[in-house]
Amino acid sequence: MMRPRLTGLWRHPDFARLWLGGTISRFGSQITFLALPLTAVIVLDATPLQMGLLAAAGALPSLVFGLGAGVWVDRRKKRPIMIATDLGRAMLLLIVPLGAFLDILLIEHLFAIALAMGVLNMLFDIANRSMLPALVTRSELVEANSKLAVGSSASEVAGPGVGGILVQLLTAPVALIADSLTFLASALAVKSIRAPEPEPEPSPDAQTFVRDALRGLDLIRRSRVLLPVAGVIGSIAVFNAMFEAVWVLYVNKALGLEPFTFGIMFSMGGVGLLLGALVADRFIGRVGVGRAIVIGVVIVGLSDLATPLVGGPIAVIVAVLTAASFLFSMAATISSVALVSLRQAATPIQLQGRMNGAINTLEVGLVPIGALLGGVLGQTIGMRETLFLASAGEIAAVLWIIFSPVWSQQDLPA
Image 1 (tube, rainbow, N blue to C red):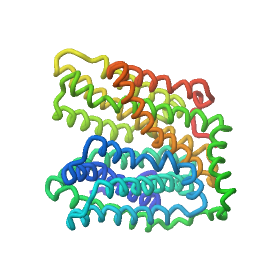
Image 2 (cartoon, rainbow, N blue to C red):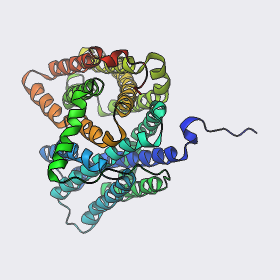
Image 3 (cartoon, rainbow, N blue to C red):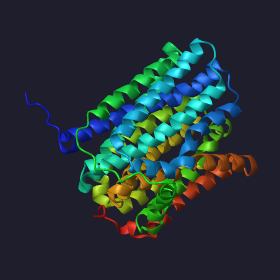
């Protein structure tokens, strides 16, 4: 019998270890995403306001600390940061079942844990994305990010399901014990990477630190590639958060869909994520980096536009929204791979942390602002009108790319 042979970057042992560590870490984050709020609901009987504060706590660090975190990551080797953040997340999660067992757990404890997890998630993601360009060649970035997206998509498909099973069998606080083990496994995978890292720059004083934090923004502002990339990422973050702020309520109340159908749509969305990650490398290579971004973003906006447009029998609504969820997830994954690869290729190695910190501020930090805006608009002008506005904003985000040199960018810049 012939044995299957690994091809491409799967034959790169250090990339495989980075992929494994990142995939396990994302899998653990998906379990936390479900188990932590369920602990608040089931164990602490949290109010809607408390649930909103808990959700905001996880995104707040990227808005407040994103720029400074990029400088901090640039001044240190990336592998120890990833290991330390994995270990830190594993220990943090153990506080919840311990507090529940001793009957001293309060909602304020969950706020603090969510905030600390947000800081560690941010540092892990910035270090992970900043380490990749030093591990593979620029010509391998699209392939590398496609493979990383496969692992991320698989985690997002399997993580919530496994988390639900663990919560059902073990209760939400105890499920977090199993979750902490995933972060330990991730730390071991990252620790096994053997490639030497470039020596970081010396640590700056306070004034230089602030100046270097702003240097990440200045790098983006001056770049004919990074500025439109940041523009489209920030626009999508705001308008998609606006959309998601009222989507569940609109689909449930206005369209009459039951919770069971949400599971169907989310499952097809997971399939779209995985398929998009599998085809991203070839699709980007065929149409070019710039056009792949535009096509992906337009399909994202059109997929969301299906929600305020759809009507009729429940079966038709479910079919249309399920297809929209699939197309949205596939297109979002392809455009994300192209955007991440382009910004990594356009940034010097020594500035990767600052660039990723600035982008992370836009990508994650603007989400609470978009969600708040969506909630206010949904209350004042109506949910359907808000969905139309958010979808149009997502489509209009491609103007950042079309009116820039990125539109004609076939390959990654040298």
